Image (cartoon, rainbow, N blue to C red; front, side):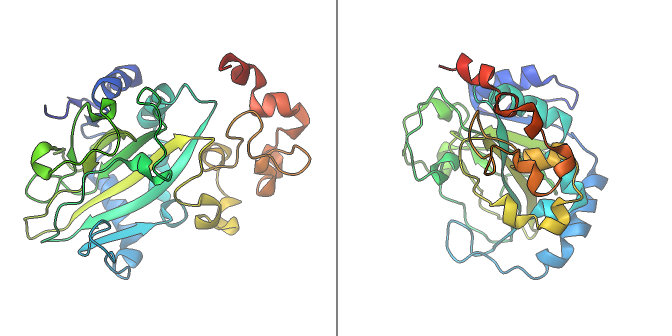
Length: 287
């Protein structure tokens, strides 16, 4: 079954419905190719220096550059894209909060072999989450056109409903082909993997993933985004990268203070009390 594509103006509820069914969906041309070019220019210093991966999974001909919120103004805009956040809010609405899980530029070089088919949520120490409970909603933005020839991400639509720790071959998957400026959204339970790059060109994408707020981030945003950068970020982005409570009582500072006080005290909600900070009523609804 191929990956379903939707237009850039598709409502988040429609996209979330597709994700519930297939665990993957592509929004075509959500941003212009020029936006992707800006990211490439901003990331050029690191893409020229970062070595390829040390093993087959990370890719011996693949560069992976993280810390994108600190290094790219344009990526900050992608992280808060309304269509994406609206969809994430729908798909992870069963949790009190969600945060950025990781940011990464992935450049798959010519001749790279296909990645093992896996689930991103295995990062949580292979914990067996219930099939009905999704903990991640991820994005992969196309900085270049994604084709089967150049290693487009391989997916198995609907596989979030399958048993855990299954093994698949690339031939069991479908290529998530898309144009530059498009974005693939996929759930943490989707079986997928980077494709084999049979072309002479580098296939580059931007991986930004979101996870429920009570789980630890894969990329430590507090250290990846230095304080001197964080102090100038808007409140919405700071809370999205983790300066917020993950649930009613997770992540506060010492005397029940709002974690955002660490970098932007003027945004603090501490004086409103822990009930508002952690949304006690919302937490009770889940009991």
